Amino acid sequence: QVQLVESGGGLVQAGGSLRLSCAASGRTLSSYNMGWFRQAPGKEREFVGGISRSGDSTYYVDSVKGRFTISRDVAKNTVYLEMNSLKPEDTAVYYCAARAAIDLAYGYWGQGTQVTVSS
Image (cartoon, rainbow, N blue to C red; front, side, top):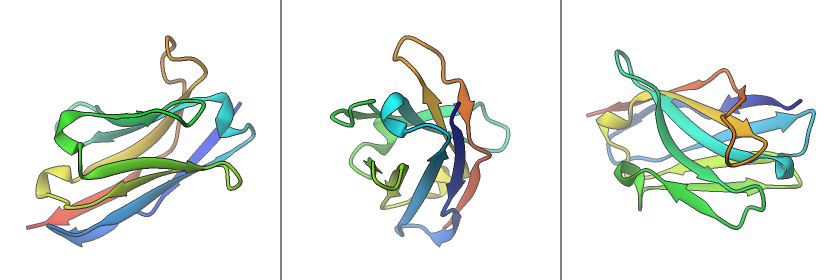
């Protein structure tokens, strides 16, 4: 099994940037399709974007396209979420998750990291 730990959250002004990290242990990230999710207060958890097991493909929800970028460092066994041009509506707890295949549910989750964007 894989264990996931997010870091990099914090408080940033609107228009600013943050980079979240998701460090994996127990298994190599190359074994999983990875996703980033977020949950704002009073709202359901929302898919933000993902990266394929091969690392060749990334995909994003429309609201973050052009602002967020997912990448990974195989040597560090870490996935990143680079967030630029942040907006107050991006405020949420951000989670990374892993699934063994694209037709399976995300079965492994980190504990989350808080991102707060002030206006």
